[in-house]
Image (cartoon, rainbow, N blue to C red; front, side, top):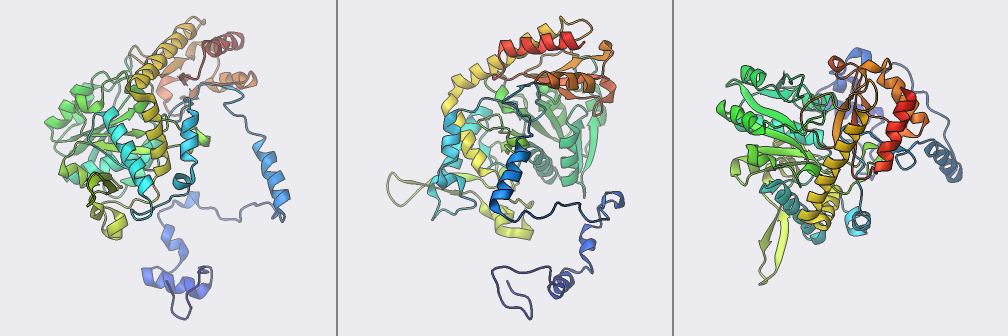
Length: 464
């Protein structure tokens, strides 16, 4: 790349005013601020950042960063009952061993002539996850489940030519804001109420809000509040009745014991692969997936990479490469279905290792363990005076809403007291779901022992 009057250089100093002016002129704006005119005025920082002085030596920098990191309070040192989208599942050592190998760890966007192993590993991941989902086509992971959900509703809008998306009011507001941001130019989002007793989608409200303008009905199983959506088939049937696409956001750790969404009518399934062998990494170990049937109308709407297998000119030998690469922004750039940047391919390989290690039996045992431990936790919590272990009367999986409304304490106060005892309490729902009052979303995974749950119970008895 070169700019008039400047020679090619490994680094283009875009801070040079003449270079900036010419680039701005080329794209038709006058100032850098014009590029961000959609940002509300109240969010714009109007003074310089309060940055510390530069640290000049490597030794001093390392010591400074080490001191900062030592302030962290981690889930290794504390009991953790937080979930809400990022989970402390067990990570088998082989997952870290494989994903740290140089051919995978350093491979960014390798092509077939230089990266045969990575392409095959991702094909194997797609195949294994497809088997778990009972779906034919799975993409190379996107950034996280929120991006996958946002992409899924965009796919549905293109498929139907419609612009309204129905969403459950019980979903994470953070995820909704990401979906809204992706579709802000053309999509309209409408929330469907949940039933106060069950925590499940209100079929009556859903039917009232469905019309021939709805592109998709998106719901989750389990939902954000931990409940297993028992009416999945009815929801999908209603969506299809109005010509809408049924999209299900699923927790993959459930699929060893819970029916795959395609078998209760899902057209597109999305979710996060973080439970499949990924550390929480301060919220960074995420990777979103979308899956569909092997139908051209769906396949051609995937904006992200898909890998396939094909025989080569050598008998008995196979190659792995992109499927319908021309539909992506990698090939068409501005002409792609959507722009897709960096994908979480390394986490796809990691999930493939995890699924290959666990197998069907292992995933079934995982699901059973999660159900049993969460049920034990709810039973014991309900024995505490003025505490209700689960606010809803439906079946939950590994997360559940604990009701502290009758304790005379706020969730914030309870969590602060728990932290002093080395326990991370559940996610405070009082601001995101004010209609629930002082409730918290607790999570119990296979890493939590009976002793750990009992420690929580005893700590709450002391606090309350």
